[in-house]
Length: 234
Image 1 (cartoon, one colour):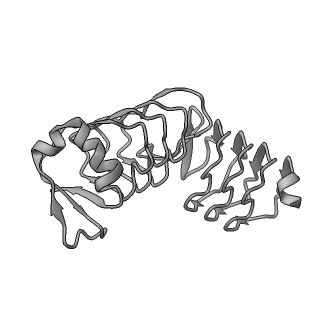
Image 2 (cartoon, one colour):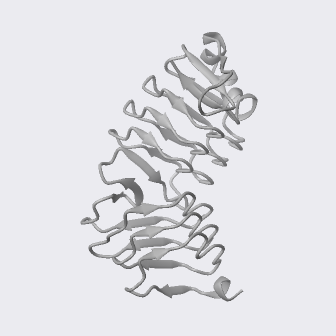
C-alpha cells in the first residue's frame, strides 16, 4: 500500500541494481529518474505502474541490462529517455532501442498516436515490445526486420491490420495474442512457413501458401489457431 501511494521516488546514487518487481504496481508513481550508477534493471521492475508517464536514465548512464517485462502494463508511459552517452541503449522519439538501433526493445505504450512506423534498420522487434498498446491501429514493419519476438504485439486491441515483410523469418509465440481487432494480415512471402509449440521447432507443422495468402485466414492463424505457436520460415 505504501508503494501504491508514492508519486515520486528518488533513487540514491549509490544504488547499482533495481531488483525484480522492485516497483511492481506502484499505481501512483508518475515519473522516475534512474541514476547513472544503476547498471541493471530486473524483470517486471515497473510492472503495472499505470500512471508512470516518463522514465529517464541519467547523465552518463551505466545501464547494461534491462530485464523482461520491465515496463509491462505501464499504460500511461509516453517517454523513455536515455542519455546519449549510454553504451548499450538509446531512445528515439521516446521509445527504447539497443544502442545500434537494431532492436526495438520497448515502445512507450501510453502514446496516443494511432499509427507508427518502425525505423528502417531495425532487425528485431523484441519480446513484449508493443504489448498492451491500446491506441495503435496500424504499425508499419520495415523490410529490415527479420524477427518478431514473443508477445510483441499481444493485447494491441486496436490493431486492425498488419503486413509481414518477406524479410521476416521468425515470429515468437503469442506475438499477436488478444489482438481482437486484427482481421487482416498480409504475408509478403507465404512460402516455407512452419509452426510448432516448441522454440526448437520439434514436430513442426507446415502452413500452406494458399491459407497464408488469404489475409483473413492469416489473421485467424496468428491470433487464434496457431497463436501459441512459434513460427519459422525456411
